Image 1: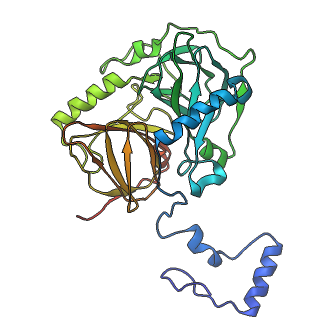
Image 2: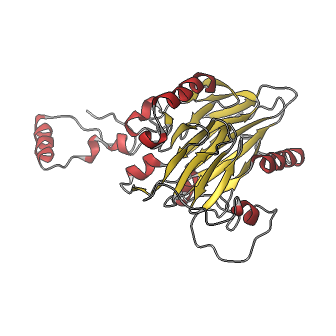
Image 3: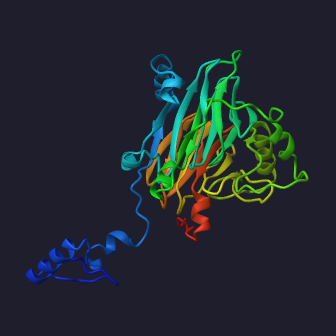
Length: 357
């Protein structure tokens, strides 16, 4: 018998109904009242669980892969992070994938493209670069880099660089769920840079200035968001604005031509928590993957405390209560995040709620 809940059926499982259900099953159909609570929940109930991956635990295993596989053999030398509730789709949370990629000096991963959108957040090392549709982009620590869906892209580390590790973020689970993914390797394996190095930063990263010309693609024309100006902007904002009671001083990375998200399916932000700052708890639809870019602190997610420090990665599932706190009384802490909010917002599904004081 179904539970008697307001707005739902309360039906006894009689022999006649059981026979009826068997008849429906043979026709690959079913009675809605038997599944209504599961497919139309009263509120979101995520299969994802709050998680934290400590960089100090992962780093040695990531580096070990250097001796076990080559970029040529593996395609991409990545250790991915999987949520226990999302193992079936290889997601870190919700419909978002993330992993740690590592490359040695002189290595180049073959150029490819896919329907999934992707990003990189640089964790350690020097000399890394990526080439996106002919634009060569140098990568530094805490830089945020786009490889939008459908763009040819490859990664490498110059011969004079050091071993580099960065975080990959993609919407692979989402695109697979929509049965719309494609993957293609570029003939010849590598691209020829067709533009000056870091030209998109030179053209589109100016303060509130826009170059002439047209841009018809749905993603941001600025492919690299550098750490130094991002952190400086956060410091200025935090010094002059109260910010959010739930996120501190939070700034969204944006498409400089539209003011919207950097890509149609993935948004990103950087937030600063002032010394000793602790935010209030709230929850919202949409999932997020966080990385601590600076400092240390803790977050309480769905009632569980997670202590984090630089390079640690944690996730907040959709509709989970969460709050953050900076552990230092003298220095700020910064959290990078990427999320699925562009999809949630474009479908009119965003909803937010604050926990009563």
